[in-house]
Amino acid sequence: MSVGTPDIGLAVHGNHLDDPVVLATDFRRIARSLERRDLADAVAADTSWYERHPNDATPGPSLVERNEAAPYVRHVPLYSIRAAAGRFLENDQAEEEAWVEAPGTLREGMFAVRVSGHSMEPTIPNGSVALFTADPAGGPLTGSREGKIVLAQLHDATDPEGGGSFTVKRYHSEKEADGDGGWTHTRVVLQSLNREIADIELDPADEVKVIAEFLTVLGTSSTSS
Image 1 (spheres, helix red, strand yellow):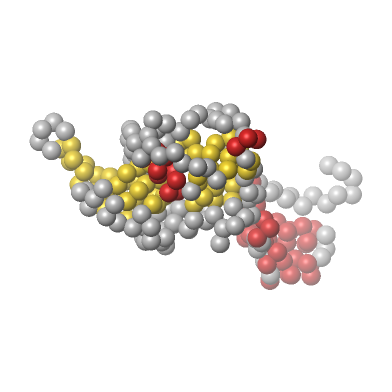
Image 2 (cartoon, rainbow, N blue to C red):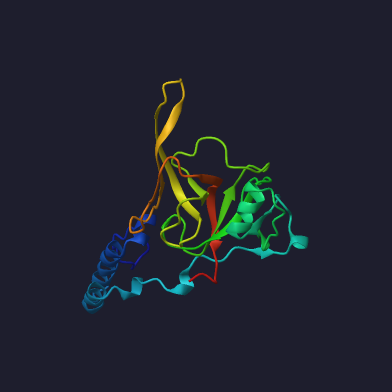
């Protein structure tokens, strides 16, 4: 222990930094150890110092033009959601808005889109540029979708938040045996993580095409509302 430094017993762990009550308790302990009761009382009475501001938002992702990109080495294409659907469901030649830097091992079929809305918060904040993976050969994503966050295209339903036919939600389905050794869907729900936003409950006969699976958030667009 350093000479002349009061032993205030401050213990700030990573989760404490997200809890204004715990932080305020630690700050009051510091103030009392420094014999500043006025500061201790001030911290207890007003926690506005903890409020987050727009400048504290996650930095935007690094975007480059195609001729500056290292495709599927350092960068993936950034599409509009409609362009991504055309590229992977209809095998259209989709024009990317830009190329965005992404971490990890990349491959064809990975792409990014801007996700608007609050339904998938806190995992995907409003305005995020999110990384997805799709079948590079095109067509709906194969394999199990249960519990995964997916980018989907609806046919007979619309997203309750944005009103469009495209949505990012967590996929959940319930099945039963069909008597022929197989199974059939009895219920399909595209779930919001934010419980203030309604889920999309689908009739099993409703068509939903799962375009891609969510991987991670690359950053937050400065143009988001």
